[in-house]
Length: 340
Image (cartoon, rainbow, N blue to C red; front, side, top):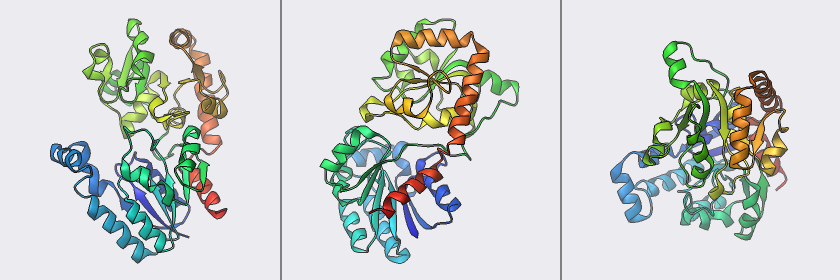
């Protein structure tokens, strides 16, 4: 089977890269169109942001879609695995279908969350042969929007990226050691959850993500976002790693649901049905459902180190033993494709 992969593949921590590695390990002949080559400047270039808001589309939008069709016409893939595909136009999807390419979307974000969506993403839904959804809450809406086949395919972890890694010198120990770490941006619905922690003055709390410094209540706790080895260090060197879902995305779990235990960290996660399906409560991870329960469990597990370490080890074994890798997710997607 020849597979065309479309998505952010660089830097290495993007899901597109995880699927590219999965394709390599599976021995699939594949071709890649990397969003990063066309839209990588959107995150840092003021001019690219300006034109994006002015035109409603990024500057390289036409070149990106043109190259997708050209690559497909030359490579002749059996299917295209499109990771989110925010800038893949409906016209491009039509052209790929006309070439006999099955279209699969791995929906890293909820397309009905307007913060992370756009008109092309929504208009393109009916042209996909399969929507692989990491969140159950969006599946009915995808079908109502016109996609005939919807499947639940959770997030996972990448073994080359997510594994325990301890600090190797005093500077790293000082920089990354914390009682509690949260890795993620300062979403509005996360702030009320984390606000009580700011009153726990004896705790060392690190908030690693964007926009925390803009809020005076959280600014003293803000640290730089962690990628690659620093991501692993931030998790390995903490005592408690928080896992918060993104409500605007209707998440039941998130990427860090698997990445935190894969890195060997003790995970304190929001109690959701999806989390409960993945891990045994108080055996492999610990859950909370209120601010009071969050604070109580932080206080308890900081003073019960042996229990905390045993749960962290069990969570790590659960994730790695059950093959929650993106290679396994690729196998799940391909199994669904075989049934179409």
